[in-house]
Amino acid sequence: MNKLPLLLALLSAFLSCADPHANLRSHAIRPAADGYASPAMLGMALYRNESTWERSFGNCTLLFSWIPFAYCAHPAVAFSQSGQTIAITTVSPVHTSVSVYDVATARLLWKKSWGHFLGYGVPESLSFSTADNQLQAVTDHDLRTFDASDGILMHTQRHSPNFYVVAVEDFLYLGHRGSVSKLTLNQFALVRTYDCSRAPVTRIALSKDRAKLAVTDEAGTVCVFDNETGSLRWKRSLSPDWTPALAAFDPISSDLYIATNHNIHVFPAADQSREQTIPCDVQVFDIKSDSHNLHLLGRRVWDREPALRSMQLPLNSTSCSLAESSEN
Image (cartoon, rainbow, N blue to C red; front, side, top):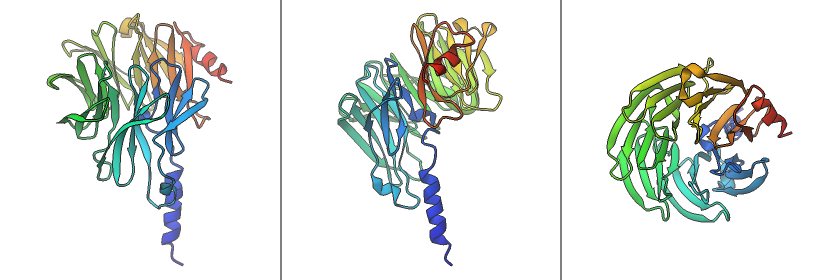
């Protein structure tokens, strides 16, 4: 009996059942924290707070469900600062693309495609500039800047490896393997680097006054730097099982929130000596803070799909459990 067809069928079934939520960068909370984007079936779905499906973007063709070894995924997503548009990365066996859609209507505004080789050249992270006039995309070996209105490629620059990108006012921050590069947004000139660890960067966050820069990685390490000088203020490892950590600053108080798969760590004014630990056994995909609430996009160990949890500030020992019970 020829076992090859059976092996191909089993592999295809395995690929089709792969967890679509495994990639942190495939999820994003909306700027107003009234919903989120997350992979669903063959597309990127938009949900409201109550996990109510609204619409889908960038659906892959059903053809991929029938071809052995074929796959179609959305490894990166980002909302514009206004929340009116959404950018999505799509990767298939033969090409990758960046697409921008109107959030309200799901209308495709523009799309740029190029080939890749075994994943080399696929965008890992996306970020709109503060003014929403540029879209930054980083692959494993370069930075690509597009005009956010029409998709015209404005700039390319080699950087390697890249795992995360965020634009903040006049600067661009690229997350590498344990380090961060700060570039000017107009000339893309290197200003300085921040060395934190050796694991891929998962989040870069700045305090309200832009004095502090927090960096987290896939091994649960957090580093807080002086943004202007690049000097390391403190460094901690917060995940005993080497799971990823994510960071967010309170926009009013500049308190620092670090989410791991087991806890939320609160550092008032980003001071490590004043740490508070809030139990929260949730696999976190995205984190966002406003003046009243801390928002977590994640799922508990027994859940298949993520949900958006909002916890009133300041946090206390029951904040996470109360947020979970409010979903039921």
